[in-house]
Length: 382
Image 1 (cartoon, rainbow, N blue to C red):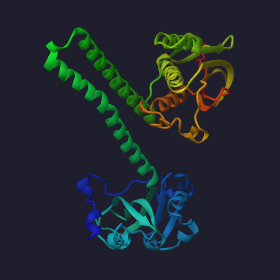
Image 2: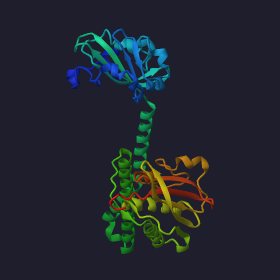
Image 3: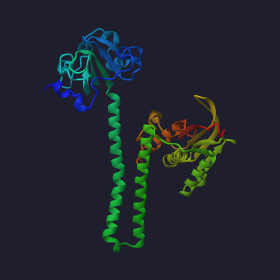
Image 4: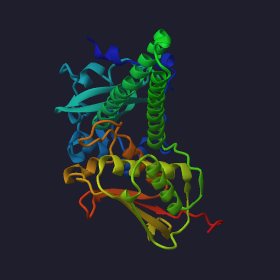
């Protein structure tokens, strides 16, 4: 198989520029000290194929030291092979191949047993069919991409699993009601419709969580800030838990006098408190204690008034070896049910407000979630 034919790109057909665009100062500027600041590996060879630039990222990705690569021929400094063991530079022949080529598309290659994503650009003296002046090679590690692919596959599998159960229930009950409506009593019909309603809420909640994750991960989360009373918000969520059937004596709220007013998104605050209280009630045991303390929060602009809120329970707690995984996607510990997305979203919402959150063991032995929020008051309202 001819790898050169496999990788050749016709710039006119692909809509690519005839020559790569480089910053002011040309390749000399690109190969200077600024090259080490690039996140991707950069290797540049001159018209003779001699490596004249090998940045810090290239060393990290390939394991080859810059001093061992500089001055060597490109094919010796980077002895790349494809998965079939064919030498990449021999097959692509950048210095003697087709004169119309301007680049090689990204390809997964092997370098001494390491997988590396490689892209090459050809810098020509005067456009197509003129001599090469430089070959510029960009290198990327495959680890982050593979991690992203695994996360994507895991997300798809989890969503499919979580959607299948309620949708199967909805389909089953609605089909049964439509086919045999006259055979059921009003009470039976009500029970089936209540189940359908609950499953529809479950699907809606999952979709909302997925949208939240998308916005958090992409940095597109919008905050509609207003002045909120944190104590009032906590009391409101405690009352909601009591209305849901939990006993009043299960909740203890301790708050400092004179907590600062906080400027934040009220709906996002409700998500944070709702997730943490529901987590403590469902997966903890004994009393749930909410403590609110006035603190000083440090930031880039100096210290600011803030509030520390701790939610703890008296259950078995979280094993020390699992504490680092609590705020990751799909973490459920040893529990069944749920998507495992709630605490991941809580962390994203707290950090979007400039706060921090951590998890540990409470004095009672149960789980303790603690988050700190700056007051965040704008100058016009302070």
